[in-house]
Length: 175
Image (cartoon, rainbow, N blue to C red; front, top):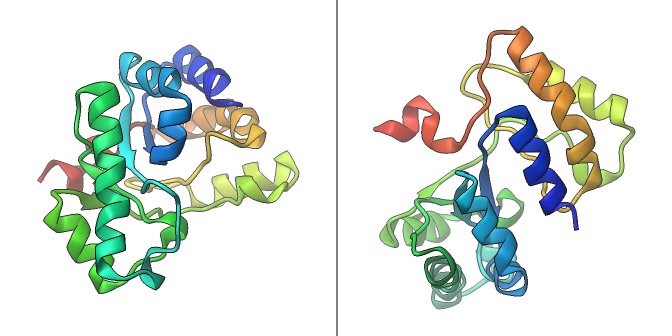
């Protein structure tokens, strides 16, 4: 598991992030979830089982999202504000249900493919090519490459005058 090392790296770099958490993983590793919140990171809903939501009936979509909300509330005392659909797959029903449950759906602007086992140099090049103000970068907390690329990514952002932070710090999130 890379989550504790990732939290240590973020702390060392002075960064806060938004973690889109899968409910069943939160239940399996509640101490990681509590550590994320204790260290000032945001938690978002990433469904309970990480299923392809558009293929599910509406009631099952609602159950997936609600179950994750309940787990995060129980573990942290906080309800998530943001939602990211597994794989970025969505449908009008997914968007509507998330909204009905009080969640803002978040998509990413850059997916460097940290989960694909690419060489570190390729990940760094992809991150560099797409780094821009207001961007949302998709990195995974269960992939060692994310941990390895994060310091270089943070340095590059700083060199370009950009600030890395959680979703709530984006201008559109403050509306």
